Amino acid sequence: MNNIAFVAIAILTLAAALAAASLPKLIHAALSFAVTFVGVAAFFFLLGAEFVGLVQVFVYVGAVAVLIVFTILLTRRDVQDTGKPNWGGAVIAIAVFGGLLWAILKTPTLSVTAPHVEALTVKRIGEVLMIDYVWPLQCVGLLLTAALIGALILVMEEKS
Amino acid sequence: MPTLSIFLVVSATLFCIGLLAVLSRRHAIFILIGIEMMLAAANLNFIAFWRFGPQPQPPTGVMVAIFSIAIAAAEAAVGLALVIAVYRHYRTTNVDQLDQLKG
Image (cartoon, rainbow over all chains, first blue to last red; front, top):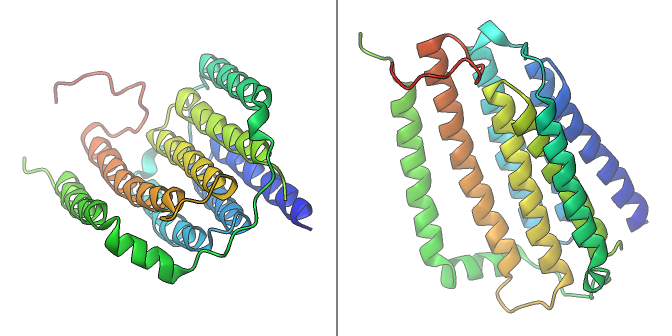
């Protein structure tokens, strides 16, 4: 059961990712991007990190994908990627993939099956976030505020 | 349940598709999409190693993934704002044509 779900999610995610990387129309690529992130969230559910999967769906499909669609609509003049693709980049990507695949398959300690663990509850995540990780949490809050202000300043009208 | 190396292979594939999008496309928004895919592949690795490894008392892999998602959201917001600002100034988002620093 788990294996069938895994194969289905893997095919969906990787096909959507390939579509997002190769479709010429930007709006189609943005929609494939959303499907890719739904697939990654499904992987998180499969691995027992339900909270991270939900956060992934909220943040990426709910916010970042909509942001990308808005940006595409605001920069309408070139909604299509006209320049010819750079084949050197494809060669580098395939070389990196080959290296990673070789490293993963050559390491015998990686072929382990999952140990049985108790489920990670949201209550536990909240406790850890508020006790052990409270300073990183504050830093991320500061970072998000700074990013919000920076994004607003960047898109303000230029005075000319 | 599949083994850890299968998850790592999937995440390496996702990373390389993101790298392909970053290196071979000319449009700035495609480059941002590729960067987001690479970040998602890294998150998938964190969660997979957390699930298959010895479970530490604070769930470190999950925490790193949550913080990484927050930082990726901030990065996407600033990056897309930069794309809009560049488009206003140069009337293009093709990164090959953005080759001067002087406004």
